[in-house]
Image (cartoon, rainbow, N blue to C red; front, side, top):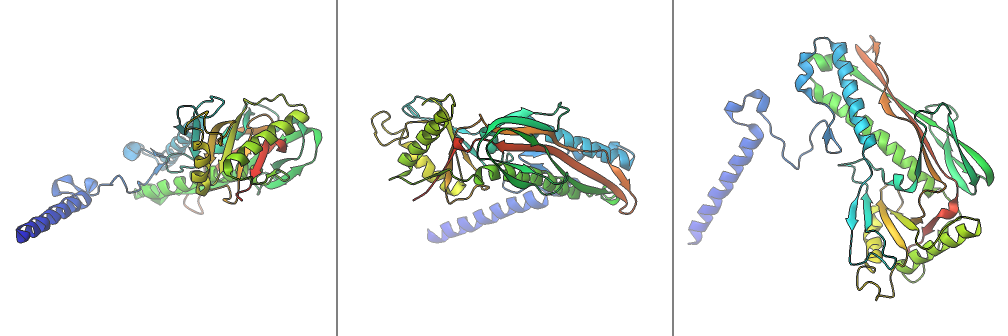
Length: 363
């Protein structure tokens, strides 16, 4: 009986190995074009955020190389427009009553850069749409202890700027540019995977840089520390209460039904969820629970894991968008036997009132 089971097991493994081998190598009838199959757990070239940037099936219908390059850039621009138009979304965490205020279910926005770029910071900032504006700045009134970025020259590294208290501050745009080259030989010899890799890297770097800057505004605030008090539940309650009290003192129209956002490193996500879960376990009966509205938990690796933030979003948190990420017309460069493509975009942000935020200690 044991010998029969062993024989059956060996044959089963051989059959499984044969199936896998056929899937990888293909059958003779598949031909060279179908020689490989990508499994669901294997990364696909040219796929970023769960979408393909390019469809190469039509590329050979275009005769001239320069026309092919123009089509490639147009396709990349179209891809970026779709990403820009996509709303920030997350998974809802619901229960019998999310908290004592009866607010909407808490939304978790993770930095899942496999399916989406890290854009959770957008929940903290009201957008100022400057895309059709002829002004290179927008105004923010009544600034107190704020932070923003500036550039000495367009395209250079952005620098942090601490803003003293003032009646009005002008926020100027940051111009970011980059370049990439599409070589003639890549198209002549059908090396499309090199173009896929180039554009994947360019797009990821753009969104990564933007996320770093906006989370950096939060991380660089000073004088907003909330000490740890017994546990995270009480600490979060204290942070929310501090924000409301401080803002009311300086004339903000706020009340206890305001919706707050918690921003944390993924390593602290479980800890934050444990605190929030107290509102789902015997709601309105468990005295040790968060009593304020937490509308979202934003999780990002751009935030340090030594603390977390409780914020009142919007208001004096502004995100100006002057120009979405796009490609300029290609410039022929015979030195590289190809075309140079300049990518650019313009944006900036400001936290003009630090009292909208509290940095919570872990112990």
